Length: 144
Image (cartoon, rainbow, N blue to C red):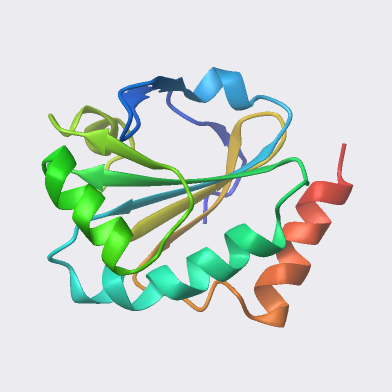
């Protein structure tokens, strides 16, 4: 976890429909950025908990983005369908965002506050749908 919140690196990445998503468009929201790959067992393990978190946070100022690291659109689409995942998946085909965020292992998750600052980072799989996790996100959402 960074000692002082740091500004999150900007990115422009396409989603599975080809629409480009810019981090700056999410200003004012709590943002969950998860770098992952279909071949990564810990990534696969945490996806159901991420889906439950995504569903619970619907209608709140919260965005969950799964940034796939260097795989094809088809691979990601098939994975999302197989696991019945409904949160947005972005394609980091060239690894540009992963490099900007200094991702060295998968999965890696960054949590951004409403001001676009990194307030937490986690390497490895987590239970994102635990009461502790929900309380953490609720605190961030309550902060202005």
